Amino acid sequence: MKKPRGYIRHKVRYESASALVCIFTSSTSNGEKIAEVSDVWAGEKRKGHATEVMRKICEMADAMGLTLLLSPRSEDLVYGPTQDKLESWYESFGFIMFADNPKSMARKPIKGSDGDN
Image 1: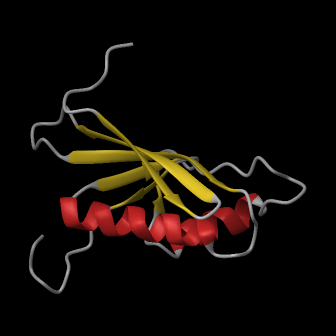
Image 2: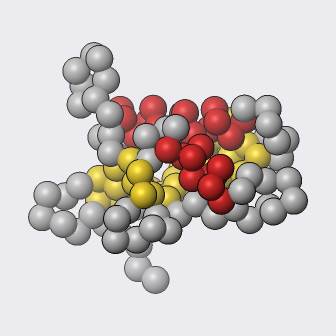
């Protein structure tokens, strides 16, 4: 598979948690910068490690003007959150469900108080 233009893979880590962020420039006429977040994982549950990873990702996205995309899936049904709790957790970072694809969420960059975006 051919990688999109401007494709960059970046692993974000904190303590026992990590996530993969793939950044690329979309093919739309406005050249929007998009990053797909995947493989969000924490070895130690309920310690805030995954929350810190997502905070770092959102901070990076805001600084770079990136729209974040993800597809939340609760795969660890024994120790992980329910699907509803997982979606609610992502909403706490500013993600919203796509109206035309309820299995995907997006987060637009938030302009900082320093006026960079």
